[in-house]
Image (cartoon, rainbow, N blue to C red; front, side, top):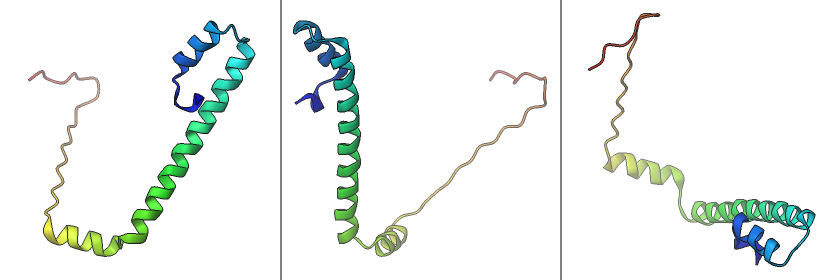
Amino acid sequence: GAFFLTEEALKGLSQEFKLPKEFLSSLLDSTKTLRKDFIENLSKEVFEKVSSRVDPVQFMTEFLRKNEIKFEIKMTVHEKGRTQDPK
């Protein structure tokens, strides 16, 4: 249950039930770790499911065949100690 509560919500519950600060700190640390592990595992499983059904080489080949990619780079050089002219 605490997994989906925000830190503020947990602090509010802690004050409402007059829980010790050490307990709240421990609970917050546990939920942060649990949340991090959950997101990592979910990401890994989603990636594995998608990559098991999609050939990345074939996908990129088809993508590049159908699309044009355009890169634009802008670079500005100014002399040291001189401010840029406003435009």
